[in-house]
Length: 279
Image 1 (cartoon, rainbow, N blue to C red):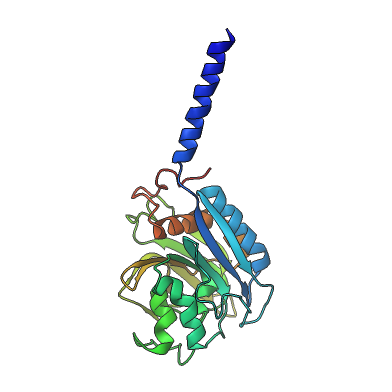
Image 2 (spheres, one colour):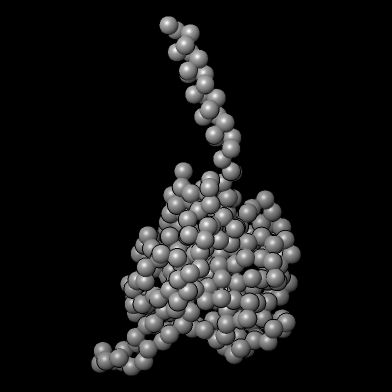
């Protein structure tokens, strides 16, 4: 009686081992955080935990507890900082890191090596110099970061709720996602959208005057994809200033889909490809 039981256990064990061996390795992500104006100390862990719960990914972090516009991230001066990673999430706020050589080093993994990327919120206001409030010219030194992003933004107004509308509901990232309105959030302007970018969602925000009466409504792209240098997939969203927004399941779902798409691990139905869903 013991022999058949042992055989069953052996078969089951081998079957489990075979299935495990067939599972793909997790997507290895490098998350960069630090700099001005945000609670990165908390948000880095919100993002790490939220993404690892939603997809077969491992998130490693480079974080500096520095609230300046020149956070001393150790990636600066090291163009090989992303070696060994499958994707980089830029969530730093480094508005006054303006040395073109340093900026080209930050871009090297995406520009030369083709490593896909995700950019969140203040990443849109990093690595800028010159007259960045006006549309930059493609190929100019101060256009490098914006060409990578696919969109140029220069600032934001007061924090008010943003009504997010998915304008392309057929894209893999946005299919079956539901429009929603954020809490009070920063709404980034659009100086220009590059031809290589494709908008996925717009956000409208009503700005009131001192009497609490509607003064104007801003309508800007808040989520998009970009094909950088004709080869590198890049997903970006300007949403994500406050901790409550970063911890919103709708936000984390959007960012998860964006990173899976950037790595070509997202099906057309908006679901992770086999082996890349949550474990």
